[in-house]
Image 1 (cartoon, rainbow over the protein chains, first blue to last red):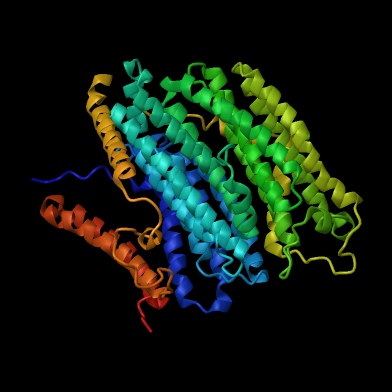
Image 2: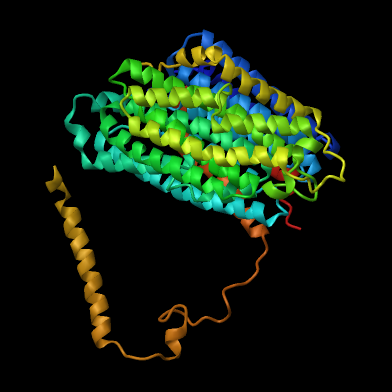
Length: 496
Length: 118
């Protein structure tokens, strides 16, 4: 008797395959090329991500949405949009790393292959249509990041960062797996599509096993997304990891994991809307308040950006809460605002980290807000101006991408009737301005401590990153129509 | 629905009761005060001969990791071999792809000197 293999649709996972194969080629190439030629691997990795973006564009116009590999993967425009955002973030992070690694004498090692493996996990995460696929994707992405966080082997903070990330990450996987098993126990399936069908109009929605499973899975997500009160690891991990890695993980992980969260709760569990929206409602309020308040007291720019990223995740979560699939208009507004915010966040956050990277010296990473950022405008006016734009955008000042993102998110919240979320969001944004503007004030009003030294030379790849982020941050703030239309066109989650 | 969990509850009560009973008996009948044995890490276990915090070569960790990687290969091979004929050509190609990916890991480990003990 023959066993019929499941349908085999490699085209559907082309972006994932390209990145995974690229990672393996880079891993092998690393062994055979002389150390002096290693930066070439960075450009190879960059090329791989660009080809993968091409594949996404090809799939976007092609036969989507479709399910592949026994329904474990859903290739739809939602996933493709998120994948493209992730790949853009990865490409910019790679450009950021090429000179940074050399300057900080970190050695290339397996840096770029690991980065590509991590990106392949993020892509799979965006397409995961089954709790098992989702879990494996998250594992791929996390394992790579654990090592990348510790890639500055000689520095104690980097080791601490890697160990902390690894222990708490593994811990959070425990919640995810346990939750998955309970959901499977209650419904008999782990597939998102099958879950939705099983829960529709059934008496299962009050099942204690299912609700406990949902709660545990949400805790796992909260860990990965660094939502308060599950954010404790974030400042240490973000500040200890090499800056280029921090930039990469603060952007890519958040984007892909938010996509997976949105796909799970709205694609598989719309029947449990009342339950998960309440839980995420509470998480969103705590996250917005804690993240932004804690950021005020930080003097280290990386720790400040870490807390700021916690606060930003809170704003995205507001729109996730508002994604009520029973009200199509509201749901569309909410989900498109999630996608837009993630895109805007990618550019403005990467831009801010790019400035931090540009200022770093081999002997001193130049992270102190008072000492190293004071008077920056006089010594390096272009860098200071770029940083000011990113800070204003993160703070949500009009004419920047961050403002449009917040506007869309809060409008979606109000349309869905969650005005308390919008009120807390606006108030915490005002608080957040305090620490974002403080950086700007320091740069333009302070006295420089490094006045006698020559300004840092900004390498060409880094200048490209800064330019791209700057243009996108301003363009999305003034003319948000192009990305927003793309986001609105990307709203079909999970085909039947 | 919930009645099907009664055995779990019974098991839980039994476990809790047994634990309480053993601890209680030890409390009532056990000898009091500290003696030499009570200070040991494992009071009723084998007498320790030397401190447990010893350095050992990191190579063992490397071997353990390599073993893990290539052991998974074997775990995957056995069930595949059982249904090999029924899977047909598809199964063969899939397995070669899998071996190909493992081979990348093998070449990497080899070139990095992970297999070199000295």
